Amino acid sequence: MNDKTNKASAAWKLKLLFDGECPFCKREIAWMAKRNKNGYLAFEDITSPNFNPASYGLTQEEVMGVIHGILNDGRVIKKVDVFIEAYRLIGLGWLVAPLSWPIIRSIGTFGYEIFARYRVPLGNFFGARSCSTNSCSIRKKN
Image 1: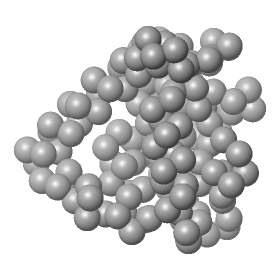
Image 2: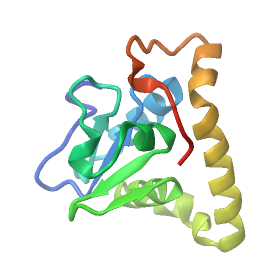
Image 3: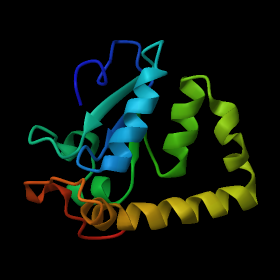
Image 4: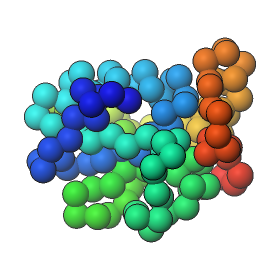
C-alpha cells in the first residue's frame, strides 16, 4: 500500500498485518485507511519482502492464516477481534458491536475463518491476486 494508506504516526493504537496480495483485504484496508482520520491505525503488508513476522513473535504461516493486529503495547490480537478494535478506532464500532454477542460472534468467527482459509484461491479465481513470491502461500490453519 502507499504512504497514504500506511498512515502511521506515534499515535497509532493498532497495526493491522494484512495480506497485500489479497484483493478483498486490500479493499478493506483502503476503506479503513480513508476513515483513519486520527491515525489510530497503522498497516503493514505481510507479503512485502521487508516484512518480518518474527519481530512480532509470529511466523509467516500464522500471519497468512488469519488477520493479526498489534496493539501499541505489543499485544497481538487476531481474527474478529482485529476488526472489532479497528472499527472502534475509526469511529465505526457500532457496525461491529453485535460481534461481541456470543451467538453473533460465533457466526462471525466461523464466517471469517472460512473466508481466511479460501481468500487465496478466491483471489486467484477472480484473477486479482498477483503473488509473485512464496510469501502468500498458506501452509497451515490458525
